[in-house]
Image 1 (cartoon, one colour):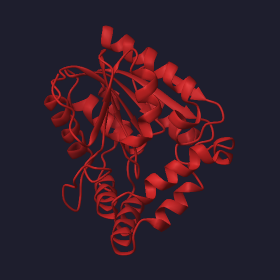
Image 2: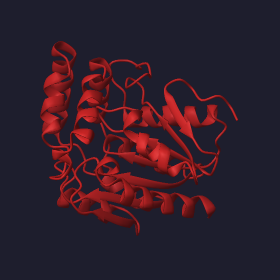
Image 3: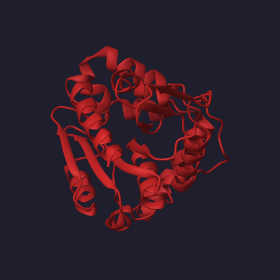
Length: 260
């Protein structure tokens, strides 16, 4: 087996599952899944370019470019066919992989994410936020997000909240800004996903301050017959807030699609 790159964690030797983190996080958000799912799967959790230990790739990185980085990684690891799970922005990257590489991707798990097209106002806001983060740092973004990420039970658990806040505060402002500029150019996935040729799983908490009921309904409606798992009480990070139920759903999905 090829050596694991430094900006990537890997565990297990079963069928391969790639986990893609959201913004402004890094691969460390998947530590519980590396421990839990590696008994049955080869779990691969990389840092996206500009996050964690991964070097950046310029002042703007689009979702197709992030997907290209993931494909480069799995090629480097000698992985031909894999399942992929992406959370929030990572879900957009997973969509790109499923749409562009159905010959390589066995299934996509879309976690706490959206298919909504970007509006002109949102695009302007993301570009302005990118400029502000580069100028002033990431503290204000991290503090703003911290109040919206968690469901009611998790926000009272320092063991969940503190590592996430610390992770956000360690994120490179340049890397976060590049991704924000790329997301300002994201396509209309609600239209594109109608042609998705691989099996899809949607996982969402019912207390998500970002992917609310309307966002989840639009995503589910855009997909051809997805499996849907709702996690009561969970917010935007269901893998950390409801790990047992999340892991059970993702394990079953990955093993099923990779066996097909």
